[in-house]
Length: 154
Image (tube, rainbow, N blue to C red; front, side):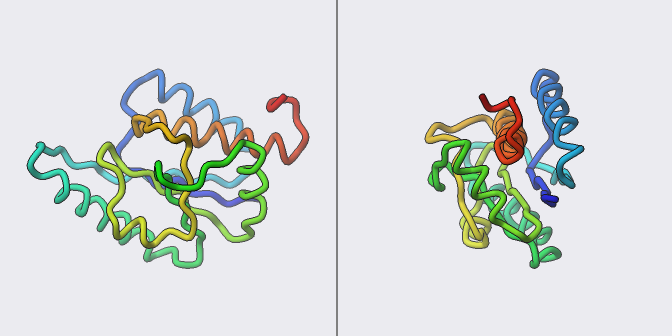
């Protein structure tokens, strides 16, 4: 059984994103062990964005340091692009517990990116971080249905 943690900066605020996110978490529940960890985001102004990104990165690294035995997959627009089928194969080849790391609206610091075992992109386009979380859980669910031969992916 897959053991997945989703580590994200901030909460999902918009109700429509929350509803979709919760629906896919519910669908995933019978198939995987999933843990959601949300770290507080910091408000920022234009002149302190890099400072805030580094502060958020320190929080992420502090969390990751406690779980060094887990594979770290960061979501990054410059990461590897995969089809849903390739993502399914990729996910099921990893035998260790997994932590997916999603940055806040400023993205991820260089320090966090350097800690990744894998970097993947949900798309070559950039998504709001709330939508990226919904897309991630949907794609994890899709990967499971592909692996199990369920109708969802057809």
